[in-house]
Each structure stands twice: as structure tokens, then as C-alpha cells.
Image 1 (cartoon, rainbow, N blue to C red):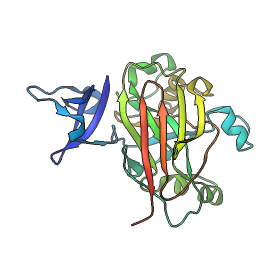
Image 2 (spheres, one colour):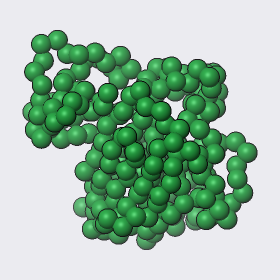
Image 3 (cartoon, helix red, strand yellow):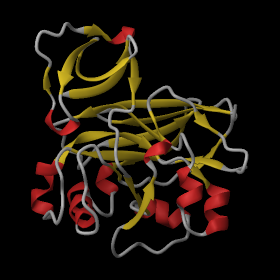
Amino acid sequence: MKIVRYRHDGRDGYGALEGDRIMPLDGAIGSLAPAAGAAPIALGAVRLLAPATPSKIVAIGLNYADHAAEGKRELPKEPMLFIKPSTALIGPGAAIVYPPQSTNLHHEGELAIVIGATASQVAAADADRYILGYTCANDVTARDLQRRDVQFTRGKGFDTFAPLGPWIVTGLDPSDLAIETRVNGVVRQQSRTSMLIFNCAYLVSFISHVMTLLPGDVISTGTPAGVGPMQVGDVVEVEIEKIGCLKNPIAAPR
């Protein structure tokens, strides 16, 4: 199933995408059910929003060997975690704002896990029970600020630096999916999720032994080699096999 979050006639809602129409759903993200008596809505009549509203976005650094190599970093022995604020979240089609504090804005296309049930101290073998589904993410990074600050909060935490979408796909095996990032149609990143150093189940388990994951929380699983710059006016796309394409323009500050 494809779960969308949308705005229609001034109201936000969740729905199940079936072809070119949305069947409205009721409830919270971890317990969605068909909305009784609700009529389907044409996909073209809504604005798609980020498909989750996380309390936190937990991101993973250096989770592809080729990305570690391009940064001349040793392979991690355990996942390297950092947090992107929920205020960085935007949906498909929304603009990534190039902040005036930076002169080196980078894309980082990633597979994202969306949590469906409260997860604490979860075993890797049980992780699937806590995963609602998967979507596309872009861990937008002000690379110059990241390097200057050493730690990641400012360089990865600006408003609009966490594009997510276009929808959540449930019942998906994430172990070997093609992932590609394009800027203005030119391929910048191309890999497969089978190249992840730490897989999705391991990440859910590892993180849940550090912090409680809540329904709607997002884990951005890391980016492959090929990260690079974006400029105002560019369009960046993150496409993942069996999920879809997340597309966002780059805009100057208003």
C-alpha cells in the first residue's frame, strides 16, 4: 500500500493511493484505517505533503562504504547517529531554501524508514513489527558549515533540509533496491540498498536501544557516494526502486 499525506480544501489528511485517486484514512499514522463513508479524492486535486510528521529524524552517517571512501573516512564499527529537527521537514515539490550562511549546499539521497509503533529496546529480529514502511529522503547538507562546525547540527538542520516523500510504501523488502539521485536530470548518485553497511532492521534495533522511536519517526539510512553541490534554480530528484521519486527545487531565501 502507498500511504500519502495530503492537503485538500484546506485540510490535511492521510490516504491510501490507488492509481490516480486517494482513499481517505482515519486515525494516527501507526493505526490508520479506511475513513467510513469518505469519497475518493483525485490525486490531481491535492497537494502532497511529507508523508509523516516525525517527532525526530534520526539520520545515519557513513552507511555506504563508497561514501566513506570518498570522504577518506574509516568504515564505522557501529552506526553514527545524528538528529535532524522536525522543523527541517518538507514534502515533495516544496522548495529547498539555500541559506545565505552557506556557499556549498549538497544533496544526499537516502532510503528512509518510517516507524509505525513505539519502539524501545527492540531486537533486530523483531524490527519489522515496528516499521510502517519506507520512503525517499534527501539529507540536505550545508557542507561548508558541517566541516567548519565539525558536528552536524547546523549544517544539516536548516528549515527545508529534510525533504521526504512522495509516499510511504508498506510491505516492502528494503534489502536490495536501486537508489539514484539526479540534479537537473543528471545522475549524481547511483547504488543499491544492499550496499548499506548497517541494514534497516539493525538500525531500528540499534537506535531503539539509545532512544525510544515513536510512530511517525523517521530513520534516514545514509547516502551512497556521489554527494555534490546544488545551486539555486536546480531541481533534485531522489528515486528509489518500488517506492517512487522525491523531487524538489532549490530556491533562494525569500
